[in-house]
Figure 1: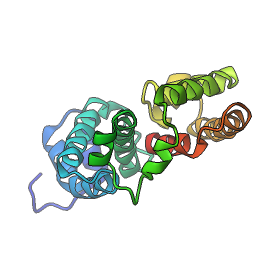
Figure 2: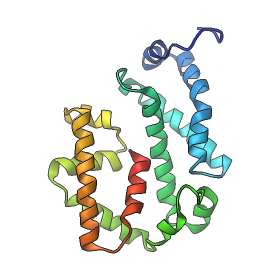
Figure 3: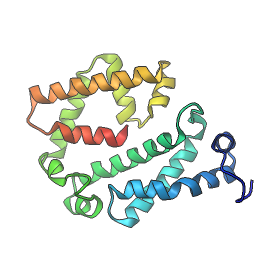
Length: 199
C-alpha cells in the first residue's frame, strides 16, 4: 500500500487489527490532525494536546483487536481521546496552576470546577452515587469510569447489546442526577461534563 493509493478504511482496519504497522501509519496520518484539533478545543497548551494525541494512538494500538468493523471507527478513536482528556481534567481539578495551563475556559468552564472546592468530597459523592445504582447499572458505570472501557467493550464483557449499555448509562445518569439533588449542593453538571469526556 503506497501513499498514492486511495484510503480504503475497511481494508486498512482489517490489516491494522492483525498488527500491520503500515496500516497503523495510514490511520495515524489520516486522523492525527482532526484528533489534535478536537483535543486542542479542551487543552490550550500544544505540548499537552500533542501528548494526548500520542497517548490516544498508543492506546488504539493496544486495543486494536477490539475494533468493531460494524461501528464508525472515527467515533471509536475519538472516544479513546475523550477518556484521555477526562483524565487530564480530573488531574487538573486538584491543581489550579495546572488547570489554568491546560483547559480553555471557553470549552471547560473553570468556575464549574471551582464550585466543587474539595475534589475529594466531590469524588466521594460521585462514587456514592454510582454505588447507589442497581447492580447491573453500577457494574456498567464502573467498567466505564474505572476501567475506561468503551460501550462496545462493555457489551462484549457483559454479553449484552451496545444499545442496552447505552440505555443503562442514560438511566444511570438520571439516577445520579437525582442522587446529587437529594444529597448535596455540589454541581451535577461537572459530573456530566466528566461523563461526556469519557463516553
